[in-house]
Image 1 (tube, rainbow, N blue to C red):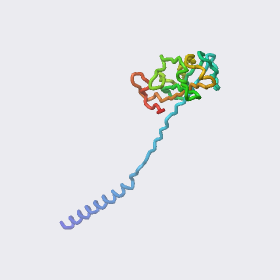
Image 2: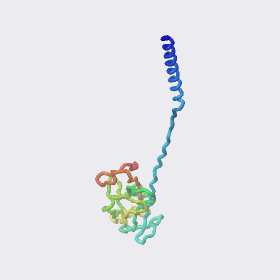
Image 3: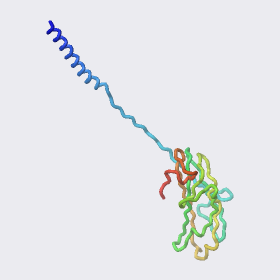
Image 4: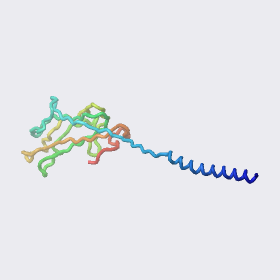
Length: 188
């Protein structure tokens, strides 16, 4: 009788082991693997460079005729045309249609140095340009330096171009209130 009890216990133990083995296989069928894809879309930064005269009209696209000593009205400002605030910088690029002559020396600009800080060849706006805002003028007049523009400039075309870059100000801290320390400024 002791042998029958041992045989029953062995049989029950064997059934328990087999059930455990099969139940582990069954549990595997109920596990699953899932993937989640998160899409992050960055906003875009857009701005408009305004070039106006003292009268508030657009600066002529064909330019203006000048003589040495002239002071030309050219008010340059930048408008934030997007939903994100940004830091802003501008570069003044001088040109001439003759390689022997220097255009940079021919112009004198009245840069608004209270709000535009010069660093590494760029003028950085010292604030944040919020959506819909327009910056104060970078400059408002261009003087044609009479002592530099002599007869060798007759018939030549002098150009003064404004290039602007902007980077987001959201989650982009700056050091010591210097907007030129912001991250993301593009290489030239």
